Image (cartoon, rainbow, N blue to C red):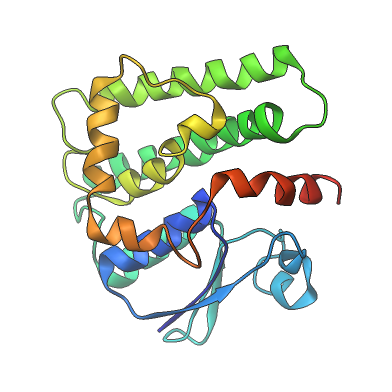
Length: 219
């Protein structure tokens, strides 16, 4: 049994979609970001960095895991699913997971801040992060040429990248001309487990996120 501490964000979806895909029982503990619940002493014992998601593996001496990528790797190993068994295959999937963690997530996150939330519009900053986001999307586009999934077989690499790329419009990043990427987005969007995972702990209405984000930025 897994306890999942999460909110409706791309990083949160990575954990919930993963759990839905592997069919592992879990209990959801919603964390209100606008109320700062991720900064409480109770939550900081699970994740010293004060970010969602975090899990507690009740089958493993209540072992706590933070960082969404680390959670996905933990669950892949625990379940034996969504990760190749051979060393090279595991490395390829891990590389594309790290691509999301180090590139897609941070660049889209900054694009979100400067394009949507920041009180002052700074065109150079907006362009910087949107352009870099588009460049990273083009890397995915090339990798998906002739493939249905990033590493041929569906894996945690697809889940991690999809949970972010699917909100590209919110970041103001255009996907025009990226046919492989668009087909891959639709392919994952059609998966029942993906559909279930992105409404945990509740459906995200992007238009309603703006006020919450402004509150967080002010803290």
